[in-house]
Image 1: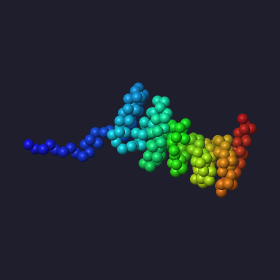
Image 2: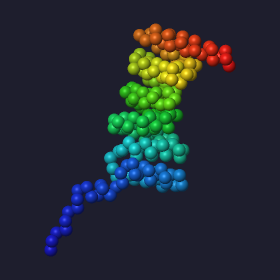
Image 3: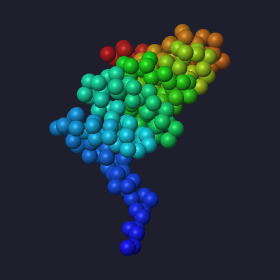
Image 4: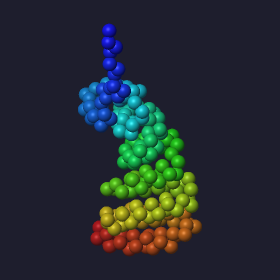
Length: 204
């Protein structure tokens, strides 16, 4: 008798939905069946190599379901994974979701820089500023973090017309990084922020 044809090497893998489709289906199911949606994603994690989209979706679902510790455990490994795969926005989402557990994420300086830069480009750079502050608390001499915080301050000052917020960031930098070679620019930024804030206060 003839031997049965061998299965195509990728036949089994092709039967597993693509990550984007899995995530879409899980998000739809989560609205009515959170446990089932998370179980679907957990099964997908067991069947394939880690994927940023799946880790991101499961992390956020765990957080929404109140499983804060589990969400943080996922984020701890998934944030570096997402950054390494060029998916910094997904990493930033997980970081924001797990902000209360940030001390448990064990992020190194490079990861903080990527997250902070990504969040600073957000419509409201408050999250970026808070993340740059984390880097500066670890190392007040971190010039990249100083520049990032100054960028956030400039965004508040010029694009968002929020001089009070800009002034708070410049004041923070001068307090925590007084020996920075950029201190002169911090003073200038603080002076401009205060100058812009005065007419607003008088008008109010």
